[in-house]
Image (tube, rainbow, N blue to C red; front, side, top):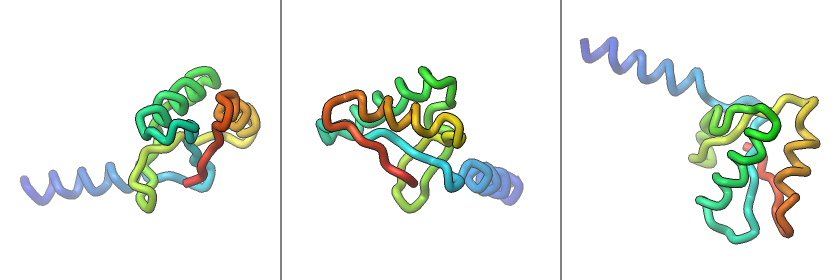
Length: 88
């Protein structure tokens, strides 16, 4: 039982790793909570799933953004003065 549970957890972690098209907003306040709020708002505006993948080398959740919505996502992140985006 333990082995199957570990295998399932490992598979879930691997299945949700970010691809090359994963981004998140960086809020000018520098607060990770504000980053998450801004990323979630932009994701919802564009019909994307917030925190859809886990960026292992940054140890944060990111959003997978299809190419056709990339510029709109960037614009949304930058809609807050000093806001920017970060790639996984």
